[in-house]
Length: 377
Image 1 (cartoon, rainbow, N blue to C red):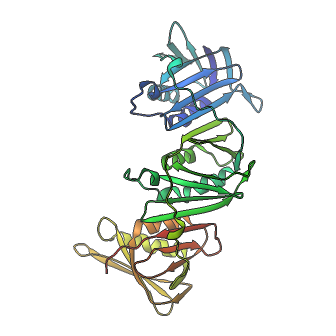
Image 2: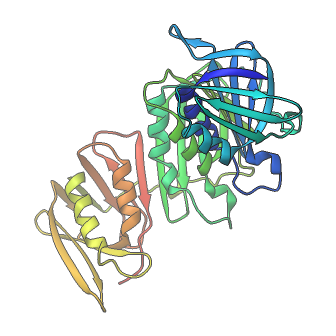
Image 3: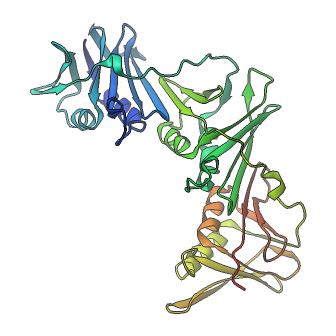
């Protein structure tokens, strides 16, 4: 194998596939990146057996020559070293060649590295996915769906299914739901799909976080293919595979209250900033903050840690309807929820001090956040 490649494109592709490479793994070859030179261009692959990422660098793009292939072939190189080497090479182009056995020579300008490669035949094959029933999503929408839900997944392995985000597709609508059983985030969006079929899958939160980091804003729509145990996201020159979590996601629809006793409409930014300030003296490991409604249209946000001090702040609401209310909640959950919502004003609907409450943008029904209060009174 021998090829010459533009360094910056190589660096970008290596960074992308590194997101899937395992730092610690029981399968040693997965600490490497597989590099394949074909007549079409160069393919880099990284995998930790949960996530696999394949990045393709074509021979040329928009008239720029990116790769010149001298000999086709493939090799696996230690990801950590290869990544650091290509970032620090002196010139704009790099020559990579594999000589006797798996000895790999990386040349750029006057710098020359010799790396011991590994046998590419031992590298696991990526799942072969039949590309039918493709779902299309614009990149910016996909990133928003991830950002607005993935923070609410559980970090505890006691219920592995809750460490993922539930994606349900029915009648051209995608519903993404995440919950750690103390809070819930949900976002809906219309999707274009080839099939009339419905899907109900759970994608690991970690996979979605990594996917979101790789996608840049300008790309064309992402094609999504779902199979029984894998999901494939296909962007320009990039394939991102993730395994799906096994098991049934709990039915969350019954958690969402239908009626409310107190409704508050308030400016998102002012409310968020007050919560941030109150959280500085939040109580205990749950960072508990209290909210109470005051006549005519004020919300009082307070927190109190006996050994440190207390903070009280009043925020003007646009309107408060219903019963008087005092409630306590985890400040971090509230901050996460408010940052996920778009729009200047939010509506918070309470059904009592010990019942979950709903937060949504005033003019947007596609998104909602639900938080369980904390018992302090």
